[in-house]
Structure formats: C-alpha cells, structure tokens
Length: 202
Image (tube, rainbow, N blue to C red; front, side, top):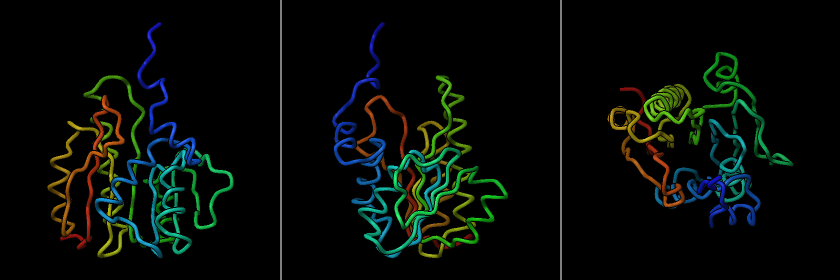
C-alpha cells in the first residue's frame, strides 16, 4: 500500500513535537500572528474548535505571556496536560445555546481564533460546503461576542464561499483579507480569513 504524504512527519510536525505542541497547526497561527498581530498580552481570547490544543497553548505561551484569558471550545477535550492556568475549556458545540450562554458569561472577547474544520468526506464539493457553513457560524459568533476593535481568524476551505464571506467581513472590520500560511500542507486547500479592528454590525 502506498504511503500518504500526510502519514509522514514533515518538518513542521517534527518541530511541533520538539516544541511540545499537540499538532503542527501551531505554526499557522504563528505566521498569522507575525503578519496581523491578532492577539496581544492581556487579551481575552476565544478559541473555537480548539482541540487538540496547539493554538490554545501557543496563545498561552507566546501571545498572552501570562496576562489575559483563553476560552477554548471544542466537541472534544483538549489534549493538554496540564491545561494552562489562563485557559478555561468547554467541551461542546460552540454554536449551541448552552455554550453560547457560557461565552456570554466569559466575554466579550478581544480576539476570536478558529482553526475549526468539518469532518471531511473526500468529496471536495461536500467538504467545502461544510467548511463554508462552519466559517459562517464563527463569523456570526464574532458579531455576538467580539469587542469593538477586536480581531478574528477563521479557517475555510478554498472554493467554499470565502470571497462572499470576505466581502461580509469587510463590512464589519476596518480591514479584512485572506492569508494562507506557509505551514499549510502543499496539498491542502485551506486558507484563513482575517478580520482586524471590528467595527460592529453596520
């Protein structure tokens, strides 16, 4: 049987293991942060689709620097032991009434970051449609939970309506753009929508 490229540990995977992160996706956030300055020390941050926890851990270690808080939400528990002291983790659907109530209790947020992706089927049309729905839900959540002046990062599969979402984000943020970090796998069709300086619903 042929070995998939994804079965092999690339340089980012090896680096993540060395640095103590659960997944290589941490370096996507590192690139986004270097380019867009999404999170600063003292911020209250919401991480949607946080498991296994690389973005949460990087935010704790490198961005908040002991100042601020992270609310991490995922259908699965974080693979972090111990969970950092700045982190409050909720297991559940971030878009459900129950979790939304908990977010209201802990918000509003200076930044919302989301590396969430749907379960893929291998059918690009279906996968991009599911990704678009997920990205739309994160954007709706941002209009409810983001502070004025706050920042947003959403993952979306290319071809999944990212241009339409980008237009909507440009009506909500002072600046919005797409960014595909170099840490994305070469065969991946994911990209990120970045919103900076939230202006509120117009």
